[in-house]
Every structure is written in C-alpha cells, then in structure tokens.
Amino acid sequence: MRIEVRSAFDDAVLAAERPVRIAAGKIVQLIESFTDLTQLGTHPGLNFKKLHGLVTPDTEEQLSSLRITRSVRATACLREGPRLVLVSLYIQHDKAYRKR
Image (cartoon, rainbow, N blue to C red; front, side, top):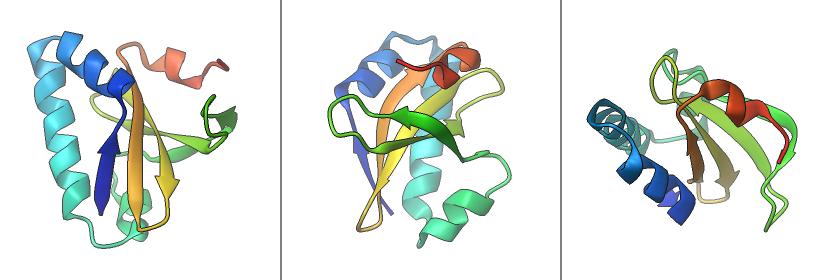
C-alpha cells in the first residue's frame, strides 16, 4: 500500500516527543507492508475506523482514524491505488474526533 503524508501530519510528528516519532515511523512501515485494504481494517493494533461526518477541508474526502499509540491518533483518508493519505496527528486522541 502506498502512503502519502500531508505537511500537517509531518510537522506534528516532528514536533512530538521521541516515542511518538518512533511509533509513527513503525506504523508507516507496517502500513506500507500491507498488500490490500482489508489488512488495514482488520489489523488489531491500528483500530482503523471511519470518522462519520468528518471530511478533509480541502478535498471533502471522508476521514478515518488510526491508532499510533494508546493516546495518539492520526487522521487519514483512503484513495484509489490503494493509497492512504496521512492528514494529521493528534497527541490527545479525543481531539481527532472533533469536527473542524
């Protein structure tokens, strides 16, 4: 699976503490190793799920959430290819579920 990283996600990872940076890197490597979309939804550690009613502000694409650590979440959207676009990173996971 291909991964595209938006600047907001990249900036948040770089500003985060070292354990979060390491965890984000491991998640990216894990997702890149997937061969199809079903692995994304069935992997027990990722907890990948749609955020109903939340879309990206610029492209109006459906946002989903995935676990980076116990308390850190990322938002992402799926595109054809298959391709996962990492949109943003939230150190406090409750903020990932709020409408923008």
